[in-house]
Length: 633
Ligand code: SER
Image 1 (spheres, rainbow, N blue to C red):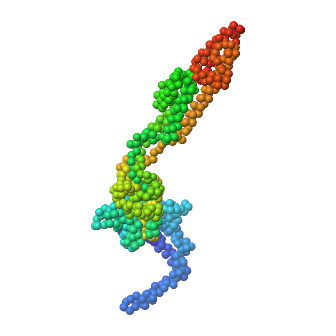
Image 2 (image 1 turned 30 degrees about the vertical axis):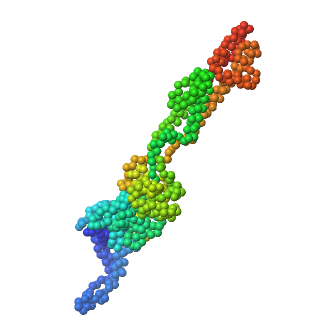
Image 3 (image 1 turned 180 degrees about the vertical axis):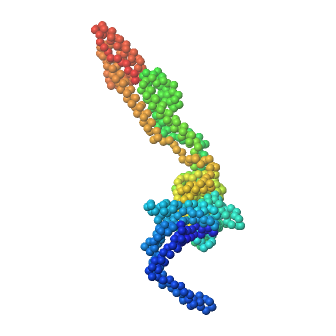
């Protein structure tokens, strides 16, 4: 009744009888035989001389057959008994009723029980009898065994069988790169073997380790070691049967997917344009950069307008804002621009003037702080020293474009973007990139370099005089290539996704590709100028406050003038003294303007005097009242 499940060297995991099935089996056979005889069965054994042939060989065809076998089998299946292991009987399907086994872990010559198996509850760590009272649960989450000890005294579950590759190692082609060896680089191996290291290699080995089976492989280098090999060529070698797979910085392109099966991409890349940049901070007009020209213009106009409004509001009651016209004009300019530094010396005495001034000072505060912040950030800005702003401007020009030798970029630029092949300059090493970009198109260099972002990020981390311009204009990713229909492509894709989800992929990336040698990584290429629309709210508030203040001021002024004008008219008609009013429209306007220009104090003192005169006249003729001219605005 013992069945072995599998073998691991000299150790194996097995199922053995639970309890004493062997004892019960003998007991069962005895009972069945008793029933057999009761039914008239007969067993007899006799020696058959025909079994021995010539030369002493056995003649099996002359063996007798036991005629009562069917009856005996029927009696066995009908037998029901309680043995030492409990109830013992067969189901209608002639299976043992509720069979139960111990699961044992063979370790060397000994064994240990790791659980039980029954057809009622499956694998469990508790004896099946205690489960019969509960509803059966054979869900996979309920299947449990104690920890196994595997060959080599390991407690980790072995990853399984060997990948079926006819017993030979997987031949993995790897490009022998001469630049950007952070991705793939050859190192000296033992016994002349090709050994590689780098980001792509570590992603591959980590993904292979996650496969549920072992994959023996060996790396075979591709390329002459003098220039970067063409990655399309190395993928093509798969179709010739030389390699089973290709591992490296292989971009997944349509052309290549026709030759091989690719895994999921393990890194995103895409084509970008790289051009030279230069520092902008040397400009003599750098101080003007924070604001756009309309913003400067409107700010200047507001300084003058607010100065004029405050002058209007203060002129009648503040000696600081009075005097000869030239002096007043200078006062307006000086007052308004000194508010920029909160350094205005002229006091404001009118309520309306103070309201306008406080709103304006708030606006000045915001403008000042924004200017300071923007100027600080702008002083670290770099400026493009090339007219190329992205792939569009590169397409529009006729200048030479650099690309990395061996990359799919060459074909992409010609076939997809329609760039003439004569414009494309192959560059092998990062030093060639630097040289060509520094020389520029007029001295035999290139206008820009087009390459994958992955390489360019590594390149730019140590070459701050260049920068990526514009957006990534082509998206792709790198994957591992396998022969068509290889199951490894799908399994490695799953493994890559696992690496990505566990964060391992990012760690490998950071280990090989994170560089921060260049401090200009955070510099910007575009000047973020503060625009007028960012301040339109502030200017509206200030403009509205000034307008309302002027309206209130003129309304009060009109009232005051009216009273003044009519009392003067009364006096004139009554034969009294006072200022002449003039009868014509221009005369009235002149009177009004001279009233506006007149100091308020003199108007008031004149009214007081007039009131006193009226009072004295009124008391002589019997009293009377006159309205007060007092008003503060
Ligand atoms: N990654 C580039 C390509 O796949 C260059 O190796 O063509």
